[in-house]
Length: 106
Image 1 (cartoon, rainbow, N blue to C red):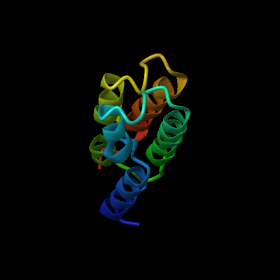
Image 2 (tube, rainbow, N blue to C red):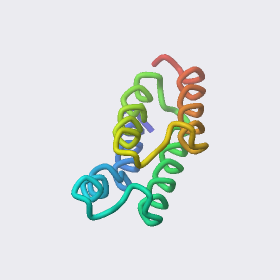
Image 3 (cartoon, rainbow, N blue to C red):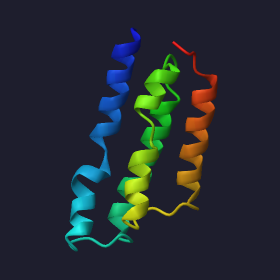
């Protein structure tokens, strides 16, 4: 599989379960609270999906930088939906750092 095709597949997988697009708006409008159990379950599942995607064989450093979870995680931290000390957040950050260090340059 070509690098660009692999990256597109990774981005599509992440986007399918991205809570920022729909659910974060509900939190901002006050229709959901950051601590709602359903929201937390969706976000935990999304973090797990993100980790799996980052572990995909064949992603280059450039591809991984394009799917860096940091900006999305920062939005969720700012909204109070995630907390920096959550094991899933720390795990995702660790997985990303390791994948980036081990990935081929190009």
